[in-house]
Image (tube, rainbow, N blue to C red; front, side, top):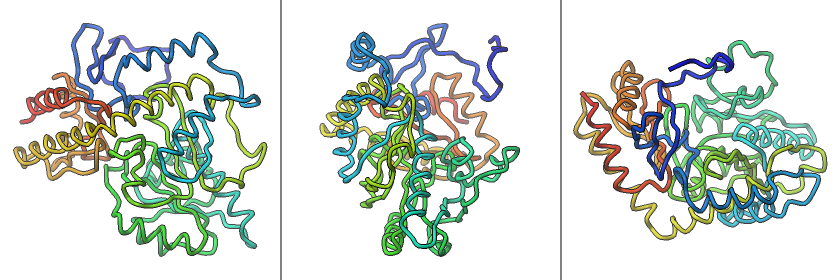
Length: 387
């Protein structure tokens, strides 16, 4: 494949180029099909070429794509209302364009809260080892992976890292304003946090009037079976961030919070965030996913997906130690991390897309609407490359 000399070499791209898709199947330039267990790294919640989404995009593009947040945007208000209702939280929303921007917004909100709500300003944010919160300077520093920090210093002060939630609780001091965490580590190993520990953290933070920030960029939008994984955990965060699956491929990010009166005019903003196209498509995607979830089919397919992963674990104990994660965000833990790239590349050649997480985990992030037949076909192709 010819390399594009006009693109910076930031991605270690695989040797395939896709030209179209249908449901959870992708097609390359030669017409070969692939079962998609990656969904554009958790973005394509409705798979590909969903007729209702395509129609919505066409209709909205014929009206207005973008104006500006200096004007009223009714589709933005409608979309925010839908998200708040699905979350069951009493919150307000800020729209942006990505998960990193959503987390940047959360950090700014927490910092302002710490400055105006306490006699002595609080600014420190605790994050968890191997977390990933973005690639902007602040969110990169919030990411508790030291190897990703090389070359980009100096960073903003005020981010500290805990090995786990219990240590995070013990690290809270007079300068701490928030703890920010993923309920399942996405890039850092598909490790699900302990529910009881998270609830204890929530309790401690509320007693101290400090903030719990939950990064649901990857876990949110029905990937767990619930709209938010926070709902499954039974917690009420102060701030939640979302992106990826919200609009099934149209760029969008969101920070939602119960702190409704901390930000004021001019504190934050976005040129593109929450425009007519992205919020109209987001509302359509959420309506489709809500109906799909309410039908019971989502949970049935998650159960079936789980059984397929367990079958692989049971049949190939020489290759895999266990599975990890939850819902449609799961991983197979390899005994030998040296096999990681080989398995991903062999799977690609055999027509199934999987991802990596950490150093030794095959990550599965299928479209939320993937069918049992597509799951079956994908795992058959995956099993065929195991040795």
